[in-house]
Amino acid sequence: MDQVFNDSLLCELNGFFSLAEKTQLSSNEIEGFFKKLDEFDLPFDEFICTLCQTRFWSGLEDGDFNFKELCIALSHAVTQYNLSLEVKPCFHGANHFRDVTFSLSLLASQHHRIRQSLKSPLWQISDESYWLLLFCAIGHDFGHTGLINSFPHQLEINSVKLIGEFLQTRSLSNKQLTYLQDRVEYLVLSTDPRDFKKLSSLIKNDTIFQTELDYLSFLLIESDLLASTLPRRGMLLGEKLRQEWSTNYPVEAKKVSTPEGRYQFLAHIEFLSPHAECLGIMTIHQKELNNFRLI
Image (cartoon, rainbow, N blue to C red):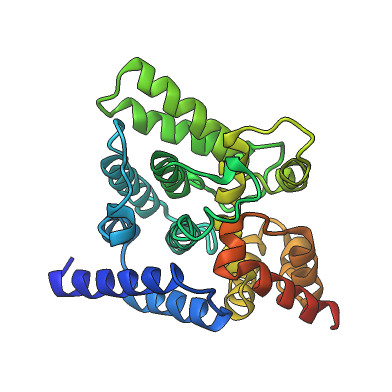
């Protein structure tokens, strides 16, 4: 990557994260930055290298696992895999991976602001856990075929397998490897869309036993959904999903990019983390839902 180009993106990311740490963002502000990322049009692994150099991520301790190095190395593996594909999914490709990792970074950037208003102590996420989330965001759709699960967690299981194979190549102790594989499996499997209502109900019901991994899972899912919630970008991504499904799922493809399909998507999801509340995503989602409810 050209160093001037790298420095320009790094400067833009630092500035936007700094803004996000201070105030709620509007949909126009967030969409505007996604558009900037489209214009930079970096390979996914180069984007991750730059993202990890930002003041935000550099300020988080990555622990004994050296998560920064693991994240960059995994992004290389994901990028090489995608380049090897003859037919690349229209939606579940490099731009989606970039959108999710950037969205996670935006949500995580709220961690100082939320400490005084936590809904649950389990939202008090450690530096190392934020790095674990970034690692999972990088690999959550590793090997995605553009198909829909024909049984629960079908595609997610394949992603876990590929991440596991990657981890086997790293210099990790057996204890570290087992620890990471167990957590990666839990988090990545949770991104199956069919599990959303079950997990959101768990997060909202504080009478049921909950674990840190449940909360980490939900923050990962919010990162997966954030870009699709935005008014203009959401419609654009709906069209990409229509293209991805057009051959194998013509009925679903026809519906997904329509106002009815958009409304059903927005009504199905919700944002529950204090990160999403502080960032302004809850407000953006509710406004977008109300707009489509009136159509």
